[in-house]
Length: 196
Image (cartoon, rainbow, N blue to C red):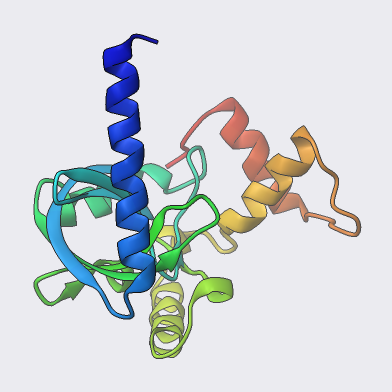
């Protein structure tokens, strides 16, 4: 690695550390920045001053790459936020040190809209009130109307899809028995990509 690249890497690392310390010490912090990238239906990149920060959308879980509706979910987020100024309300950090955020554009809460449009599940494990109760009702409504991923009778939640992929690759979780629809989802994603 050249000295110039090393200096850039060190500066970037220091900037990230400063951002993390600033955000983790704040109770309620929010900022506005341009969304410069959409990775998938629940992860975007937003500028924080001059630093691009990966944001995991709080309280939702969208289909994984290769699952049904993963591309549509990503497109839905892109249509709402890509190359637009969004507001991010800091909610914490995830296990991968990404900022977890409630993202809005004007009066539209992106996280909530993804659930309402049937493009993501409420991630009940990581979602708390006041959002949890309202978003579960929106998810149920989307399911009843068969919109988005709910056109399928039993879509495979991404956390089950990830579990089976992990188990198939490395670690077997004692007592985990995926049902046939989960195994089929993983097989399809490995063979065909997005089956929409």
